[in-house]
Each structure stands twice: as structure tokens, then as C-alpha cells.
Length: 54
Image 1 (cartoon, rainbow, N blue to C red):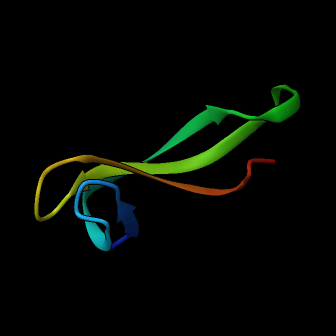
Image 2 (cartoon, rainbow, N blue to C red; image 1 turned 135 degrees about the horizontal axis):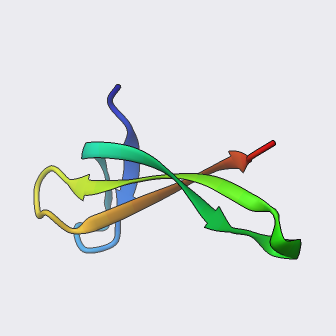
């Protein structure tokens, strides 16, 4: 599954290498789903916040 996210270093939307779903701590203690991976061009770590995990 190819996931697109914003790369802060490149300042553009890029495809993620090795995307993995992780749980982040959200507001009120509710876990939030997010995808993490690396930029295909520069190798910087990227995050894409998804919806609230139920």
C-alpha cells in the first residue's frame, strides 16, 4: 500500500517507504492512528495522522 505524506525537508508531498501504522497519544488520552515511514527521496522520517482509533 503506497501512502502519501508531507515531507518537511523536501517541502512537498512524497510517497512513504516502509509505511507502518502506529498509535499516537491523542487529546483526552484517546489513541490516534497514524502512519510513519521515510521519504523516498531524502530519507527523512514522515508522519501522516489518520482518524481517531476506535
